[in-house]
Length: 616
Image (cartoon, rainbow, N blue to C red; front, side):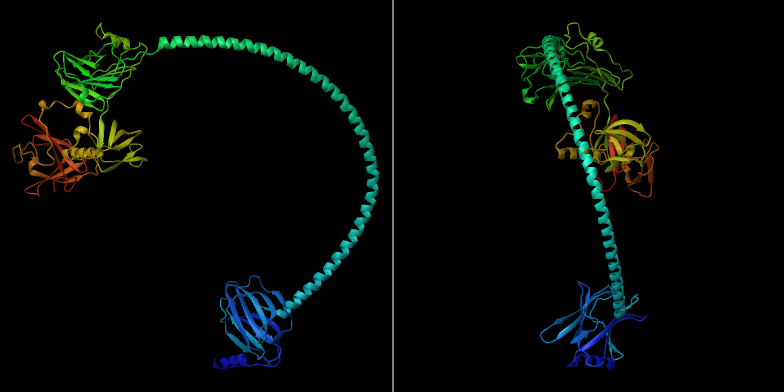
């Protein structure tokens, strides 16, 4: 290694007065590496050199000072697919101090530096060691000879081609000359024939033009005659249409005045509803203009006067349904509601709706529902043993003889049954497309969402949410009367935050407060009920605590443990009896009990620890 460095140093530092000569360049690849060899004519006057690599253009430049290349300057294509050297360009470049002979190589991906190892072999061969690669190698003199031979061959073939093309051109010129002579004769004949044909065509065209002019003249005359006839017919038709239109307008005006539907209510009233159920009667009235509580007049002579603008005089609409309102009519003071004798109803005005409610001694099987709108009257016995739909004529015959009939006999009546409302009591549930938990999820519902109960299907409940109909787990929803006090408080809080009322519809059907005593225990025991121990009749809920709920089963179960002795526990299901009551409802967060003591019914709820403000 030391010897090679000394030789290279001498090679680089030596300056000669005569120019060196390179007679050949070659690329040799062996097992260990590949070598780029520059073969000098003589070991004397060897020049200095340098190598430089440019990554942007993938070019390796090798330059020698004061050196000639016997094969001359030029560009050489060596191997386009080689990973080492693909092309070579040889040229001289003069600088201020010396003249450089440059070999500019276009290289492949394996050459990435100008720090390639150099050697001096056989005293005349300057070697640059390149990376190992699969390359057949080349010798420039052989390439030069091959290129020269190929060039000579190509020149000979080009010479032959030119001679053949010249011969073919001379033959083609002779043929063209003969063809031109023949074409001249044929052209003369063609011109003569075309002239004769043109004269014949001009004659035929002249005859055809005369014929067409005669036909056009006849057509114009016929069209003029037809236009005059059509104009006359059109005038007659327009006159008839005008006459028919006037007649139709008169008939329509007459028909509209005769067939204008008569409202089932007096003007200014949108609807009236009478409800009777469970010892309570209620009457609702909705007007076009909103009712303000301060506008309700005093109860005088069994008449409630509401100060609303309306006609000064109107027909009297006799109700004769229920025991609250007898008739409704307008006068110059406003809208008047004539109350049945001896009735003093409770009055509520809310969002433009007047509601009158009173106790009733009538025993009704279910709910009697009477609804009057401008387009007709609807009557329904809901949850009763019988339900019927009658025509308007049959319904009108039930009214008093002096009642004024204000609706058309052509109107139709519809039954609109009231549906029970379900409330989501789980934090989040899915609304499925079918009664299967693997079916498509239509929407996710959260605690407090209101659903319309449609059908009971085993573990699932068919419901309607807004405009979507689907199925939910039955255990994840409850009816309004099955909610625990904790759930009710949470719903009230949610309604308060939204600025809404919790549920105004349910309150219409609640029993009067005189019939029962109710209050919310908010998850605590009733202080007015005596504490008793466990007896044969069932568990005393005042001496147990809710410690767990088994929810992921077909039938949910609650685990109760004694407060003083947690080692004793009980498992209960919905409907199980307890002391003086039963288990009414089990949800994922709490248990609702129905207790009956001393003739009083109450609901008592027990929540899991740390849920919704319940006991911890």
